[in-house]
Length: 350
Image (cartoon, rainbow, N blue to C red):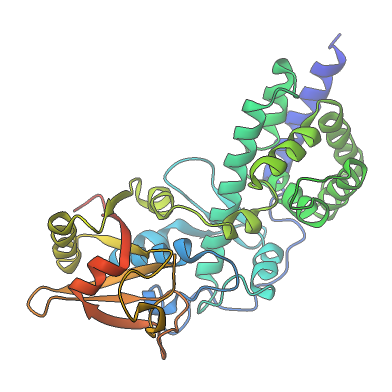
């Protein structure tokens, strides 16, 4: 005879496997083509209302140097929507409703939906990693039940999607949480995604008893990373992690190191690097604050370096500022003074 916790765990694990198979349930038809007029290219990438310049600038850089890598990361999901493959971790299922939620809220303005698909998948990946870390570090969840709680998150499919849909509607940014409401919302989202009501109730009860919701509240209160997938993405991030997700490596250098910086710009010009650069939080040079390209503490895609002319060409992921398309060229000396850091990666074949 199985003990109660063991019985719940067996049922929960069975539910997770069912959830993974049902991951395309209750989807709608995509209304926007995957790729637009510019295909997978920097010109197609347009940041939206979130503070996700690091993500959009990095995707634009990857689109320039490794477009086939991004194309190859996106596959169709049998039940609708898409699956996105990263170099490590499970594939993320991107259902049309969640992708459309992001576009409807202006989180991405890119041509087609390929950037929105990658954005949603990366956001889910970040949320999953944050929650797994929160559970592992939690002193609220008993050690012997942590594997069961982790099984809720460590599979590709419905569990994470349902959690995200529920948590973004009930959890406050300061970590305040109405557990009863979250439990009800989670059950409703699971049911909407095709999970039987009895199994959804079982999962909610198990997580409630084992302290999962308390751990969520504690983690949100500390750093806000588990407030929701899009919210986490919009709180800022590290370009190197975006590069790592698709190419396995991202390294950062200080622009002030002129010799090393110029060397990397030369490799960029030769087509061997994808690169982004970030401005200082406050302008150090005269006139930067009024320049048509200047945005403080902002991430840009580095497009090219002309060694003869000693100029650097960059692109603002807004696709504007400067108009019409966010692309501008500045003297190398200005680049070295106005930008604080750069992050780069390269395809494995190079």
